[in-house]
Image (cartoon, rainbow, N blue to C red; front, side, top):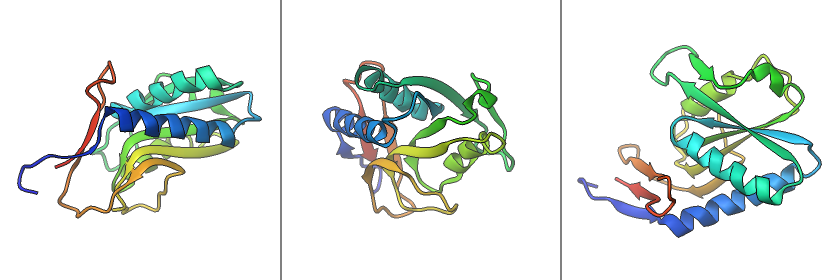
Length: 169
């Protein structure tokens, strides 16, 4: 695309996608007492916080935010969380990231919970690029894009939600 930015989603469209995903999570988990929303830093965590804020207003269950920091360039799982993952035992975990490209980040994110007996795990991405190298799919996505591998998806999520955008670069 030779350096050009193509706007895929604007701020209003991103908010609509997040709202829709929050209602899908509610429908899928309406009988739960608590769900754990695990956001992968940096933008996955921002998206997870926004989902939690919406769910806190519409859902009868409690939602707890977990922040996951991954070393994405490592060939082994190296992760830090702000929460004891053993406390997720027998609970629903919603794993959140901004873009699903190869699937490596979501696979590493799932790895954080491998030794914990969970009730179920679901994944959320704002953009699904369909270039998976790992056998990872997403349960909830804002938009699926068929792109060429050299394209880059740039997700901008700012604190005020006013400058939010998804670009194809």
